[in-house]
Image (cartoon, rainbow, N blue to C red; front, side, top):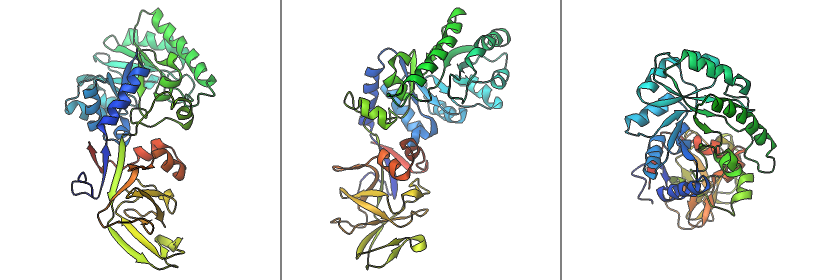
Length: 374
């Protein structure tokens, strides 16, 4: 049984050494630009306060959050690096941003007109170059700059940015190139005003596949956590550098029992056992983030072997087949996501079984599960 569980039944370990390696890898890829570590959504499941603290120790340049309610706890925990809220900020929270030196994304006319005239606030203007989510249209750039200059004399346009919709497939670069062309229109208009904001466009895929899009800063999320943004990017670049997943999700065997052939397992009797089976009961379920779609097809690692999920994933329990795995005892450590010996259950494989993406697998891990940085 692991010494890292601290008396809890399920926990997540985050590997500091691998995080450092990933960070150093991207420092080489992005040699001229600043790096923002995207910590939003509980740092993609890795515990955003712990993760941000580790990134500050490593020398990160910026921290990216989704909301002011994510950014404020970082300031309260002593983090000092520049922070950008990437998502929508409620008008009543703008004062908190100004008071705590937290930069805000402004991406539409309602948002810009909500900015207080007398607030000494830093903003990043976001432009929609083709993704059709947040952002002013490029043809609005002159009007936006005029408004900020005339109506918001205390507001600093600290940054100008966009976001790519299709940078994850190196074989089809045209859409990203078109977005870059539109973004350049914005940058030209900004430069003509004599403004020198931080220019940023690329996330992990963009930083790897489109080095011309690195500009002054890149926003790295999935890559720093050691996961490839897509199978296409992995196929094209994994022979050039390595990324190491930093997260391992663990639990323990809570109960073992033997049942005869012909038994049915789980809610609605969905699993019919064709042989006498040794069953392991694990105290995790879909409440913890183990997706219900993994019923009867998910795999976990026990003593370096793969064990298949039997029957339905329940709210707090899954059942696995231990029949062919030697030396399993109550309390034996189980890896749900990550490596154990030479065996691995990767986020990509789990995502494929669940018909989703690795992003969803890790970000949906219940934030109440203890994260332990090792």
